[in-house]
Image 1 (cartoon, rainbow, N blue to C red):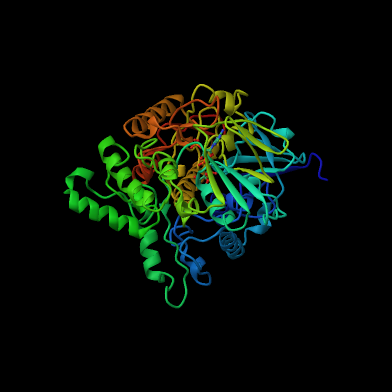
Image 2: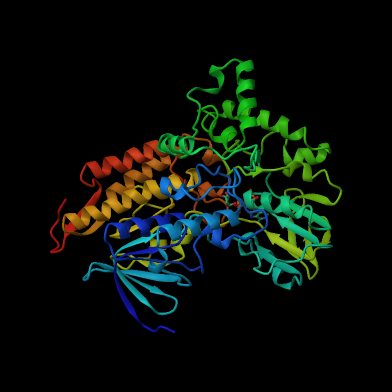
Length: 544
Ligand code: NA7
């Protein structure tokens, strides 16, 4: 074991998913001494940890990749929406091509990091005692990482198998002949339920809030359905900074009621047929902002979905006549035959609003209505999204304050990338950025390029520290709050507003101005000499 060893670096990058891999490759190309560390034992981040059956990306393959055309010369996705195994293969290919392994250290959890005022460096300590001293710390720690398992009474007394969707046992459980429960109906649950429905004897799904899952429209690429040709892929990647959520499509340039009812119906039908997130993020521009427009969108979804469910009582739970919340204000899962599963006699849907879980028992779950035995219980109950992976690290700022304490009365960031009191620290996919409303690779590159440019600006101008001002943070937070307040998002209990974690402050955690506006903001800050930051030279003199 290494004990108290020390490594001097220009940049320490934490987290070996898309964002971290991109950072390492490009920082190294510019001559920085950079190291990438990760708690896991391989590349992948989310795709390393999440191993449940059916795991798949809800973004189509041409969009879910880096833009570097060289990477496509000898790699081709086999499905429109690739599964976890294929994504890990892709990342293996990328990391080999970019030759990043020699500067990556796995099985390394950074539990704490502190800013050293004198040395103007970060000092990060791994669980094994190694200290990394780096001029810059870049956290690419993901936005859906810190697992949330509700504190059910007596869960420790349950003797069957129990695990969170994101901690799927590496030795896959045998589901044959088993009675299995899935708690939750978010994107993870949908994918798990679709796989387990055919593998288990009996499946019980515990639903608290209905989702509004949309048809994925998967395509297996083969001789008939050929993969998208390279020139089209290039074109589609070229437009993603112009799309609200970083895809090759965006909201329609018109409002819902600007179309006649006939035209609207046709528009909905077309989007519906295309699959992907188009019915959510490629529809009328006012859908997430205006109640009546939102309701139109919900009604079409509801009618399409109810037609797939045989029992009207089950349909009332899965796709109620009155929406449980505004359409699209919770992350919409993409599905493949999800709703039909509930027509099977061996699948049961439990409505947790009517019959909540009271406690666990030795054999299973006791709701207010009955006790139900299970061999396996899966909690697909989500994550402490956006802030969890940052606040769980003991990050000490300039004055020693922990980031989690600094944020206890509300998250404050500048540009969703930096925080006052934390010089030379950048975080990606964090709060107050497009993050979960941005295609992952798009934002890995967008934010990643900006961070790399900024670090390079400092190097080229003899700047040793760059720190956001409190005023800039206030203004950015105001901006985030205002944008979210104009939308329907704040009215829904979702992890976009921190409402899924008991005790977590309810506040907008996502920047709702869209990718193009965000991109503009980042560029403007750079072009105006890093407005909103204090930059200091090596001798402590203020550069700007
Ligand atoms: P999500 O989207 O947070 O879904 C969690 C689900 O678990 C959701 O249906 C919740 O219902 C449910 N939940 C949470 N707490 C409870 C309790 N206490 N009792 C019953 N049900 C509960 O997480 P996912 O893992 O599905 O998806 C996360 C992201 O990963 C996804 O967006 C993709 O980007 C990949 P609720 O709606 O809160 O009533």
